[in-house]
Length: 319
Image (cartoon, rainbow, N blue to C red; front, side):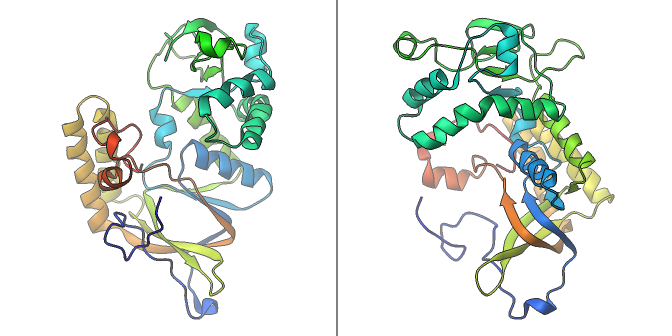
């Protein structure tokens, strides 16, 4: 992607140029933490948890209400190499076979060293999720499917069963779907992974500011990021409640009736444009960006990935 900045005509973003105060000692901060995480989806909450487990004071912000595309998805987590769930299901797998398969699938886009680490760490990642309250289930669907019925939670979510791949790498069911005990559900299982992580983060002392959007980074004169500027809908206000209602309705209709989703999304954005207040947050040790993609920014899609412009955007409004 080309190198551009907020002054360019094709910036297509509300993010502003980084702020560099002339006298940092006189800078006024509304909040502060050791580590500030921008974005409270699956990636953001995992980063916040990891930082808190390393005894850091963590503040996490989200433009909406947390969850992101993780909560909006079907609750699938790709893992292999011999996870605890695979072993319970009698599925034989190891990091070498997983690596050989993914090496063919990724076609050099991911460095071998990175891919190898992903495969070797995969069982430990499942253990980490289990340790934070995420539940999985060893009921395995042995055929290829993009998404199994509510009776199965371990499945072949990839293409490892395809003969040309299976000749080189031993297939294994690596799609781990989060398990919810309350009734048999097929859709809306994203919370099975996000909700336990979010609850664990709060129990670990992570502070969360919702309806809070980062609009620019703050750096010192040496270029080090020391904080950020955000726009927040005042918590507990009528505007905050209306914004929540419209945002959630937009998400509910996104997959089924896009015009209605766009209607509610526009109403939520109008509240953002008129009711938010500026705040500053100090990050004493660092800022982590976990803000997803840009599939809902149609100008950026048209500019950078035009072949996907006609597709149905998957994710949330913040993507």
